[in-house]
Amino acid sequence: MKLTKLLKTNLISVLLVSLVLGGCGEVHQENGETLKPTDTPEAVATDKDPVTFDWYINYSWFNTKWGQNAVSKAITEKTGVNINFITPQGNEEEKLNALIASGSLPDLITLGWWEPQVNEIIQKDMVYALNELADKYDPYFWTVTDDQAVSWYTQDDGNIYGYPCSSVTPDDVINTDNNIGSNQTFLVRKDIYEAIGSPDMTTIEGFENAVKKAAEEFPTIDGKPLIPIGAHYFDDIGNVSFDQYLQNFLAVPYEKDGKLYDRDTDPEYLEWLKMFNRLSREGYLSTDVFIDQRTQMEEKIAQGRYFCMLYQYTDMSAQQKTLYSKDPDSIYIAVDGPKNENGDDHVLPTNTVNGWTITMVSKNCQNPDRAIEFIDYLISEEGQKMVYLGIEGVTYDVIDGKEVVRPDVLDLLNTDRAAYDELYGADDAYWMFQDNVMQQKWRQKNEGPTAQLEEWTYKYSAYTGQYDVSFPAGSDEEYTEEAIDRLWGSTLKELLLAESDDEFNAALAKFKLKRDALGYRELMEKKYRYVIEAKEKLGLY
Picture 1 (cartoon, rainbow, N blue to C red):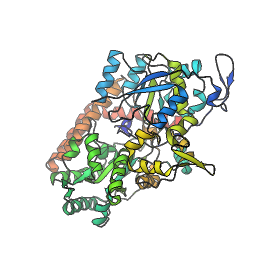
Picture 2: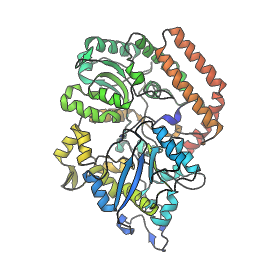
Picture 3: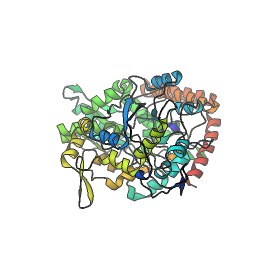
């Protein structure tokens, strides 16, 4: 289960990749003139009069302002568009549902592709079809968008209602020149790890011993208790660190013998869960892990209080830089984590054709023509260069024909991301349409404190987007899957907190019975048919 949850954890400043394949032949404007794929953005007449869009970002942690830093000012000067970002102050789902119920969706909406509200918004006719806006106002859309992404997101009615960021295709991964990695890492605090002998943590015994030794030798960090094991936050369908990430590190298969594999009950995976349960009973799995949300976790990462973490490195890059500025030896490094008994390589997913988030244009938008032009600018090479590199003479210079980020700018980026965003706002601070394959042509040599984390993933990255499939919104199958996912979410906590082996086994047995009663086996048979269709669509057969 939870195949649609592969990207659900914040990702949050995700720096994965997409590929603009470009061009759909000739595209005809309403005036009869023909725009060819070689035309530039300037070839399309655009309105530069000032306009302000309310843009809802469905993440409470997003706090980058518009109009204060160099990049956003330059984009406004170029397009005439000013942005008023709106983010939820509390629960994202409650805020988004309230906006939908009241019919007050802002002009632009960015949310995770997997969110059920995506289909709800479409079915309630609350957003424009981007293809219709493009045909009517700005056919440049067809030149700058990715053919496969457009095809993937085109609905049965022939329309595309949202465009993704960080979309990646199987060909991108196969092309090793792209250096496409995963954001899933096993992290250890460098100084503590080295002080206890840089132990092998790929086996259950090695992992267990390393955690205990770290806690015994370093009980406190700056007067505060060490947290031996860190993880993403728990939600109502589980915890990606203890389910999907652990399964990926163990190379648990997605399918086997012509059907979807039951990853949640894989024998080796369960043995690792039992190990975490033992550590929990012995006090090494802190209660913080079960109650902290992202804000609390970021604070503790910045303090270096975790010994090890199964975590998205992109989610802690700002905190990594804070640690580095204080003490380079206190940062986190990526090392090989849990492996199966065969010692197989980790199978760590890259991003997929789904990407991370999608952005839609609400029918409350009074200037949809300007909205599609603005979107097209951000997707274009010029827009991507702006959001990634910034402004020539301000954030970078051209030296011997190559763009080079200024040393003082790079230093600020590597030491104080918040200050960098406030002053400059490049390096995908505005990630809503980021395309990192395109951006690789301007990529700088990464020598900062996150370089090792990213590069470590290259040898383990794999495309698994064929399994990112979901049932139609509102279908019986969708409701059944959601019920099973919630059942797993509560069960995972029970397994980790069980007070004995017998209690662990009883919780697992209860889960299997309830899951089967909900129709798990029939559901997986139906879902596998979607996987087959996805493989065919992606050319993976």
